[in-house]
Structure formats: C-alpha cells, structure tokens
Length: 365
Image (cartoon, rainbow, N blue to C red):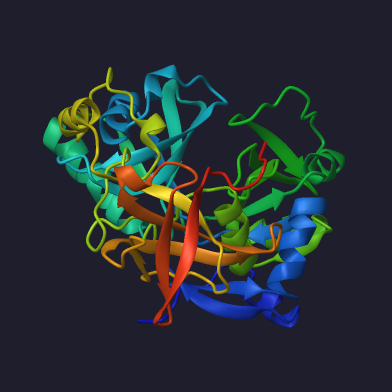
C-alpha cells in the first residue's frame, strides 16, 4: 500500500529533507540535522509539518455527549476556544490512542469539536465514533477531515512572537491549551497554543490547498520528526504506538503516566475499569531514566535489576542534545519507580547502569 504524502512533500524534497515512513505517511525526518533542528527549537523557533496527524470533526445536537463518552477527560468543561489532552480507552481502560480535543465555535447553533488522533489512526477513530454514535442513537455528524487540512507546529521561545507578527489578529490573551482563528497571508487558520516539544508555540490547522502559502510565511528553521522525537522525549511526553500500544504493549493511562487525563466523575468507555485501577493502584509504571554508563537505550531493550533479573522494557530512548546524556522511558515495577533508583539496561548485549530521573528531564513551559 503506498504511503500517504503530506501536501508539501514535494516542497520538502526540494529543500533537501530526508524522509521516513511514520504511521503510513511519508514524512520528513530531518532537513539539516536532528541536533541542529533540536537546538533551534530549544533556543529560538522552528517549524514542523505534522500533517500526518488525524483530524476528526464532530458536530450536532449530541456532539458533546459523543465526545464525552469516548474520551477520558471532561469535555463538558470546554468552552469555545478551549482545548484539552485526553485518552481514548477501551472497555478495560486500556489506551487505544491519545488525542487533543478542540472546542470550536458553534456551527448552526450546535456544538462543534475537532479531535486529533495520532498518525494512521484517523480511519479507525472515525469508525469508532460512527459505530458508537449509531449504537447509542445519538445525533452527531462525524467527518474525517485528515485529507482536507494540513497541520504545522511552530515551537520555541520565539514562536509566539513569530506567529504574532504574521497574523492579522491579536494573540494577546490566548493561553496554553486555548485556540483562536487567525489569518496568515489571507489564509484563515485555527491557531492552538499547544505543542509536543516542551516549548511554547502554536499548532496551526491550515486548509490543505493553502498549505504552501502558510508554510512559506513561517520563516524559520524547518524541522523533521527526528527532532520532534528528541524534543518530546526530553519533555517526558509519551508517543502512541511506542510508549503504549493497544495490541503489543497495552497500558492504562495510570501506567503510562497520563492519569491526569482521566476524570472519573464523567461517563466514558473504560471509566469503570479505570476506577478500579485508581483504587487498587498499578503494578508497573512508566519512568524516565538516564544511563550512567556509556551507551544509548533503544525501544525494546530489556531493563534488569542490579542482580540481572529482567524487570521491564525500554519504550523510548535517545541521546539528549540538551543534556548531552542518554535518556529513556520504560515500564518497571512500582518499587523501582522512585527517582534515584538504579537498575540496568541491556544495550547491545552489555549491561549498563541507569538511574531513574523525574520527568520531564528538562524545564518545560
């Protein structure tokens, strides 16, 4: 099956980007170098093409009820212009995907939402919403608009000023996890003060056909998925399909360290199971760690006790450009989860000493 291409695939190729397959998409992994792009975002501002992320639009008389029963956070708390991070769980409370939900302006007098599944999950989430809507007899329109809109992330300490200088509207008063409509070079966009790097900035939802106009106006370092990964790891942000996977590594939000997305006073699929987990506690949890010995942890490497007994698995790992140290994420029994605890990571057959660190690994916004 051919890979899906973002709207600016050709433009990125002309810029000299290297590409990789991610979630069924052919995406730029780096333009210049991962380290250079990473450091630019930490120190200044960079732009990412994240058009591989899904975009599902939900509206109608029962849109709020449908969103509230299929995501773990409190959709009823959202006012127009608000956004929230949430998980999508099955009946057993296992995370299927994580997402950001945006409360859009009303359409035809009815509530409207945009939620963003991870790359490759848009069709499955669209079907899930349709199936549950029909099962519950709710009145809502659910549209998969992934192929209609591009998405760009502008991230870094100077990201807000760059975007503010481009838009016709004022961004004053747009707080974290808030959105507004803006116009860039005559193109109307949704600007959300969200991101996946640990830095401030905006994510812009742009009509597919106008993507090049907006991307070109964002005059800053282009960045690929490689830098996005090292940035999100330093910020301690989980990656769907890697730090949890519904099939190969099933985890609850509490195990994955994102239990704050679960509002047990709401009714959603998986709520009862998660209430039991909340009451009983978890046996394993995701921790951040730093290798003390030389080496780089990678996805799938074993974590062992100091005596050599396998106790867990690395889910993400990299050499942190900011810390200049190897860092990772992995699941371990709760008795090994306290910061300062030491264990071993098997790197290419060799046992390396590691220490549990608080996450995020760096100061974030």
